[in-house]
Amino acid sequence: MQEVISAIDIGTTKICALTAQVSHDGLGKLSLRMLGEGVVPSRGIRRGVVVDVPEATAAVGEAIEKCEQDAGRQMLSAYVGIAGSHIGTRNSRGVSPVDRKHGVTGADMQRALEGARAVALPENQEVIHTIARSWTVDGETEVQQPVGMSAYRLEVDAHIVTGSSTAVSNLVQCVVAHGIDVDELVLEPLGANEAVLRPEERRMGVAVVDMGGGTSDLAVFIDNALCHTTILDMGGNHLTNDVAVGLRCPFETAEDLKLRYGTLLPERVAPDEAVWANVFGEKAERSFSRRFVCDVLEARALEMMEIIAERLTESGFIDRLPAGIVLTGGCSQLPGFAELGRGALGMPVRVGAAQASLPISGLSRNLQMPGYATSVGLLLWGMKEDARAVHRRFEADHGSGNATRDRMFAAAKGWLKNLLPDRD
Ligand SMILES: Nc1ncnc2c1ncn2[C@@H]1O[C@H](COP(=O)(O)OP(=O)(O)OP(=O)(O)O)[C@@H](O)[C@H]1O
Ligand SMILES: [Mg+2]
Image 1: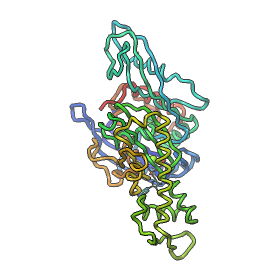
Image 2: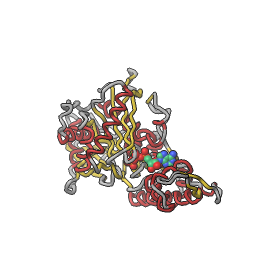
Image 3: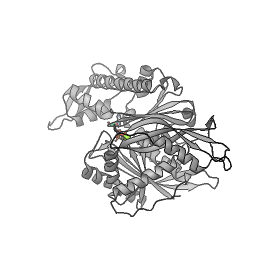
């Protein structure tokens, strides 16, 4: 098991590299202590996907360097978040015969998962995660831990996450170019889930939505298992863009207005309240109607909620979420999102961030904001992943730049890790 783990969250607006020390209390309980963080504005990323490899690689390098300086140690490998509209998900089923004499073994589980994983994929798509949702042993469903059970037949219900090979390869390249191995590519909402969901919410049924700059990533959990994931091509940048178009002002001015004066409760803003902001190229600040800014933000935020509802309806899970929706990500920091969501969706909605109750100490103020929940969650995912220790650690040569090989290692490790569903 690694003593120190790192995570890199490569977002549309910021890149966040984190390093933490893993400790165990002797009773098998693991915890993290933050050692370092490095955050830089993103470059070369659009809608969660690398569109300019040299630019993105340079920006990732800056975040890593900052993190290394803060932690006072070199980063050797990292769990890397992945998102973007190229992500596809589906549920699948796999079966394995079992030798009754020996009972269910890890190899049987692996064979069943392999079967579930063997779905026909469009060209240029590859599997990123194969996550066991539930096991069935000789027709007995909802078995949590099948190993050792005497049986003839093992079945698994699995959730398969796929992504474009090109997008995966470009992302991996930005990291391995710095001599850092990719421990695993982790779907970003799975990271968010680790940081913001409470175990009882995951048991009851909940959706987590990481509303970032370029995308909003949604994951549904019911009975502790991941059931559905989808990436919405909409995030905080769309809100800013609408303000820029509505006011005919530059994106930067609109972003400034959104961050300083934005709220999704426009009825609380006086109709005649004026706010001031800089416009690039103009000497004096210009005045804007705050109410107008907020009306524009509210319209787009409502559209986002409608799309979330549509996707949940399409997935068939909308009526199975008594714990409602947990919003996170930088965009969810806009005041009033939870209230707006509750009104629009008619279900419980809260904004979540990395919490004090997590097994992680030394979180900076920054990392306790919703915008960093996924980054922190990637570390937690990594900690659990490592703890499983069902796989050999592959020692890749640092600096080899062999992206394909490293990616294969990452995929292999992710695959083995997913032998068991998460149980709190
Ligand atoms: N206090 C705030 N109020 C409103 N919006 C905010 C606030 N802070 C950040 N944002 C918005 O959040 C967005 C960035 O969120 P985040 O940092 O989660 O994105 P990201 O991880 O870089 O992008 P993505 O996950 O989409 O690739 C930006 O649109 C930014 O304007
Ligand atoms: Mg993000």
